[in-house]
Length: 501
Image (tube, rainbow, N blue to C red):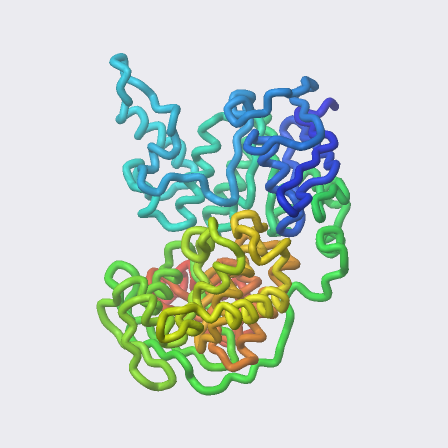
């Protein structure tokens, strides 16, 4: 069968980085072809060449057997290629409807925007996800998961012949993922061809017809689903055998570092009480919208609490702002690393140094640059951040290395409490293991570590204790091994309330 899409001998370089080297990739009609590899392997770069966002240095691109010479962004959209990027391409101050139909707004006979029609088209685009999102809501008013769904709806509305999905489920859980899979199956039956990028190997085995693995910008293998086990896929991805996906360590919980009593923020959380001890990892789990992130933001001072108390080392802590939290020894690694954790236009060094500028400045306000440089270089080396130089702009790093820079920024600070909000979102399996070990090392060092995650296997295997959040309340706290995944999900869905009734 003649492939619908054929990319032949594709190479691409950036300053200091060879992103792709002689890569071949093809896609058949009605097929889902998974593209897999570690962060920095070249997956997103290859797809940005397909979308017209980047131009290849070498190689050729064919659609339905015809060589495409003009590979600009507008031309590739016209040729029927739609892309759902891992990093959302939405305008936060515009509405949901504006974002989905930007540049394609329906018009009245007078040439003005037909708002009623556009709002109806928006509701139709969102209908398959069965979510209560208004077309008039601004993007910035939505959580990460709902923003991801808007991005997916936007791409689907293009009626593309080829659809690229780059980590589409990274911010989704439960029902949203199931609905997306149903939509994918329907699209395939309608003849739409899909390139699917994901670090969740169970998704690959569920959805893919074929799998191509990239490593260090090179094509390693292409095989049909069922021809590779998980272990074989991981070995092809990382170039070595990964001994364990969830490294184990012997935790020795010490004194209570952080204690939260009856924390309340109207409309978000109610009477939240828990403690986090030195030397342990406390996991927070719950569905999207349950309030996990918002609880952490309230503790951190990003949101103003309405009631409740926070104690550090047994003493009341008044946290009115993020700066208060930092000064009191609390570090937050946010879910949205690009919007909240990094300054993309600054270097690796400048980003890593941001959290310690106050610690290494003289009374006259002069920075002790030598000491900062030593700290930053030591942390970059110990965390194995892959960058040509500390002067490299963070926006040019892979997602996994960007996340490591966010972590390095806080590890240099030597906090008493570390809050990790979705620390492995969009991160490959090899980088995940490294991040787990870094978290465990922090606990061993005596810090209290809190991890918010949507991935149940991660929570179940890495946490010493787990707090389950449902509709802004902690409905269950369990120790490691006390419940299986089904039991935890039951509490996450609120089914315990139905049983009690």
